[in-house]
Length: 345
Image (cartoon, rainbow, N blue to C red; front, top):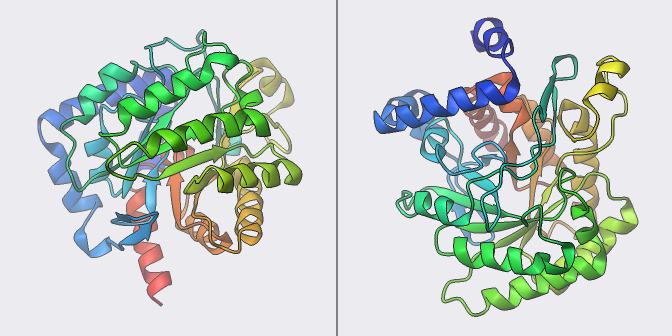
C-alpha cells in the first residue's frame, strides 16, 4: 500500500516540505501515544534479536541513520516502527538554518536522494532538553559536527562541546567529519586533522565516569590508502567502531537524466546508487581489521536482502535512511523478520 498509494502522494510534494509535515504528525502521534499501537504492529517482541556491539545491547540489528530525526523530536515513534537504535543529529553547538533552499532532491529512477542540507538543526541545548526523558531501554546515538561558520582551525572546540553536552544523554557518539555538504569539512578527514579531533575526544572520554562508545562516520569517496590512514587513526585514538558510509559526491551510473542531475548540482548522494560502494568499503575494513572493528553498515538498504548483504560483508549492525523513504514505515519490521529467520537458520 505504501509504494502503490502513499508514496506517489508524498512524492508529489517537495522532499523538505513533506518531511516537515510528517514530523508534525509524528510529534502529535507521540503526544497521543500512538507509538504504543504502532509497536504492536511493527515492532513485536517476537522479532527482537539482541546484538551486543561495543558493550551495548541492541534489541535488533536495524537502526535509523542520522539525518532523519535531526532534532530528536520523534525517536520514540521510530523505535515503535522496529528500529533497534536511532541516531539523532548531526548536532552542532549553535542552532543553524543550514544551506539555502531548495536543498533536498529525489531521484526516483535511481531510488536515491541528493541533499545539501548543511547541518540544519536546533542546536545542542534544545536537543539535549528533548533527550533528558528518553526511555532507558531505547538506544540513541548522537551524531556531532561543527557549525558552518566555525573555521576548521577551531572545529575541535565545536566537537568537544557537542561531545560533552550530549554524553550523558545518548548511548554512543558518532563523529561526523565526512559530510560533503559543509564547506571544507572534508579537510578534517586528513590524517593529522582527524587525529587531532579524535585524540582530544578520547582524552575527554577518559574523564567520564561511564565509558561510552565512539564511532567515526566515513566517506565512500576515500580511496584504499585514505581508508588505511583513517583506520590507523581509529586504532590510535581508541575509536570503538566505524559507520560506513556517508553520502557521496559521485554521480556515476545514474539513471536520472544528466541535465536534471547537473541542475541539482552540489550535494551528497544517498540510496541505491551507493549500495555497492558501501559493500566494498565494509568488506575492505572488515578484512583489514580481521573482523575485529565493529562496523555499522549504511548505504542503499531498501530491502531485507540489502541488509543481509551488509552483514555478510562484515557489518554488525545496519542503518537505513533513504531506503526508509522509498520503502516505507514497515521496512525495519521486514528486515528484522528476514534477518531473524536467515541468521537463526
